[in-house]
Amino acid sequence: MSYVEFLYDLLEIYPDPESEKAIMGSVVYCIHHKEGCQWSDELRKLKAHLNTCKHDAVLCAAQCGAMIPRVLMQDHLRYTCPRRRANCDHCHKEFSGSALEEHQGNCGHEPVYCENKCGAKVQRRHTQQHIQQHCSKRLVPCKHCGQSYTQDTVCAHGASCARAPVACPQRCGAPAVPRADLAAHLRDHAAPCAFRDAGCRFKGTRQALEKHTEESCQQHLALVSALASRQARQLDSLRAAVARLSVNCSGALVWRISDWAAKMAEAKCKDGVELVSPAFYTSQYGYKLQASLFLNGNGAGEATHMSVYIKILPGEYDALLRWPFAHTVSFTLFDQSSSPDRACNIVESFVPDPTWKNFQRPSKEPDALGFGFPRFVSHEMLKKRNFIKDDVMFIRVKVDPSKIVAV
Image (cartoon, rainbow, N blue to C red; front, side):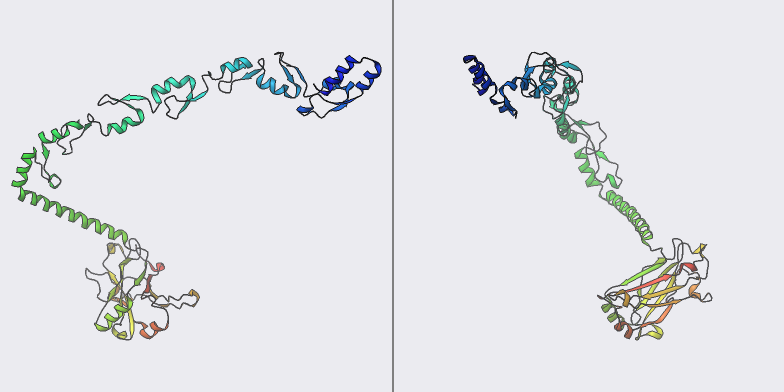
């Protein structure tokens, strides 16, 4: 019994005015104070408070007959009242509360997992169609052997199915045979000669092939020899094409001379040791050039200087070019100092003399020496700076593009 009920019981037991006045003036808490109501005042004001107390239960506003605390009325009307109106989340149709509860779990638009446990989610109304047509776990028959497999494994089965047709590996031309019958087919049917790629057209059974191979050694050798010759010509053609693609056509060559110490030692021991650079072109359809280097000098620079030259080689487009060769050519020996600001490169250049035969259109045999600087840089100078670093030297040969006169 609550304290308030106790006070009302006293009024019934002691109905005299003084007692009633004392009791009605007593301070009480709201009967819903345990639910969180903070109201407290004289007992006579309790009924008036209960008419507005949010924790006091009243009849459902939708007249479903339930007694609902005022504070919970909106939630009741929205979510639990049997007479509420609500839309299904899946089909969006409107139902009363009790009808919606019956509808939930049966809505045809609700996504559900496939009962075959393939992992797919489909609308309930489409489950049968999914199981019959799309489910990866549905059973389908192998078109070769007729046995049933799940859709996601039937392809893997086909790769080993004994009744699946396969082509003869000997390319005999027969129709595809079942995999289980392939061994018998290979024993009984004709197969091509092992030298078919070389040109032999013989076909026969295994026994006939063995006899043919023994009796046709000379023929097969001739076919293989002819094939090797054709392939050699093709390789030469491919190498030439690759070489053309790899040729420098920029008009400038940076020539890297490695193992410098060993090459210098060889040049001092032997006369006329010449190093030649890769060939390069002044442009895609320009002049073909090559640099040459004498580490121990040549001519006026022999034994004291390093000599450098440029020679004109017979090119593929010489007939379309103007002669004599009139490009300005420069040679640069790079100083490989670790500080670029302190580097001191050596540069020499020349303008071709049109009367020199070195600059006329070359014959099939290019000029033996070319034109350049026999005293390009002294051996003493090479020791003073970082022209050789890590046993490597770099020389750039550059053709001035402003002097190009190709047609």
